[in-house]
Image (cartoon, rainbow, N blue to C red):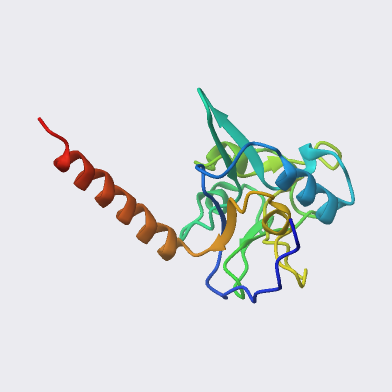
Amino acid sequence: MSPSPHVPISPHARLVVCDPDLCVGCQLCEFACASVKDNSANILRSRIRVMRQEPILMISIACRGCEDPVCVKVCPRDGALAVNPDNSLIDVDNDKCDGCGWCIDACPFGAIVLDPETKRVIICDLCAGRDAGPACVEMCSKDALEVSTPAVVAGKVSQSALRTLMDALDEPA
């Protein structure tokens, strides 16, 4: 796969979205993330996770950029997690985070993980500061990942539901 040209990320973009019809579960996204964010080949240090749902569904999950993030609300350490006012992503203050895991338990998407070395939480920040954007998106050999906004995702879900409904109506009884 050739590297994708740098496309500026909208200031409203808050999440990496995976198309499960294209994802093959290769875990390149996990390796790319760990490599760029921590100079490591340890996928346990990745901020994106490949989830397998039987029998064959594969999907990568990263922070979903919740409008009102429960992870920040439940954090008992004042200021350990905060919504960045510039990009609406979750910032982790490693000096304040003690790795208690409350945010991990609270995240409905399973998108927050504990770094096995630092014992602090790690959350996707869309590779902030990286000119080429998120490494996981750039390295995905199947183009299953893209950076998006919650509004765009909601629109796609609505369109998909409508197509499914229309298909069901067209089937003979």
